[in-house]
Amino acid sequence: MMSGLNFERLIGAAVVGGGLVDIMKLIAYYMERRVQFRSQVQRFTNLQFDFADIIKKYYIARLISYYSAYLLDHTKELKLTEFETGTWASIAKIYNTESAREIGSSAVQITGGDGLTRFYPLERIVRESKIGEIVAGTTEVQKMIIYRMTHQKRGFLDFTKRFKIHPEMGVPIITNDPSPWEGKDINKENLLKILGDDFKSNPALYMTPDDIKRHIKGSRKKIIEVLEDLEKEGLIVTLRHPRTKKLLLAKSNYEGLRKAYPKEYYRWFPEWAKEDEFMMEMTKF
Image (cartoon, one colour):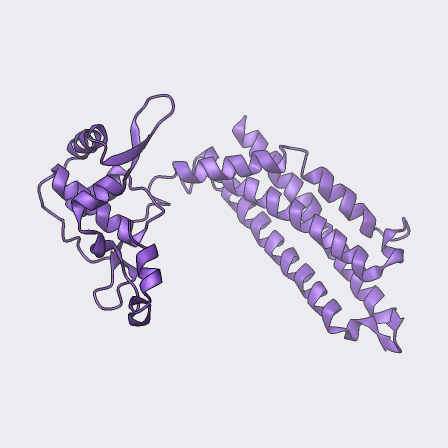
């Protein structure tokens, strides 16, 4: 069933994408012959830019359609799953139908009142592209497929680097350097310090157990046990799975941050700011 839906979505994408060639030819025909302010409108830079956007979207739609068709034709040879080919079929359908709708709107804008009449096929592309966003699965369904299938692709979205504070500039940077916590004992003190370091780099973000594991290189099960103990002591806050109650994310609260490091550790200001007593007072916690 999935393979049939993938084929249907690709056909839906190709139908609206293929019609864009005639639209571009008609726009070029119109712009060469339409005169405003004693000049052909094809000489107006803003319309050239609009037309360039149309051409760009056409070629991208064409490439996506051909690539998606190639994957469907060679699924077995490439050892792809129907979900992987389905992701590309959904991408093709979304991009082509949305681009066709945008192109139709731009085409009508370029050609003015003429573009709205039935004598020009431009208004038709607006209607048909909108239908294309509904048939064979709505755009919202395609986005759901793309999101879910991409997240199920093991390792594809894994962020394997880490943040650290630059020793001289005092600002967060992304690095591949080994963590200073690597090989240390998995205990409350060390995990609080890791969470404190992360707060300094990413004050708005939580950490996953795997984030902590990348720092300390130990047992994931042990890390979760220590995090749960810290939660019971009121030193961290966690986010759990709504159904299984599995621990997903952890973050130090203010009590945990104070226990990990002195408050001055988390504060960084340029030299000129340190001279502002009011600013320094406002940043205390």
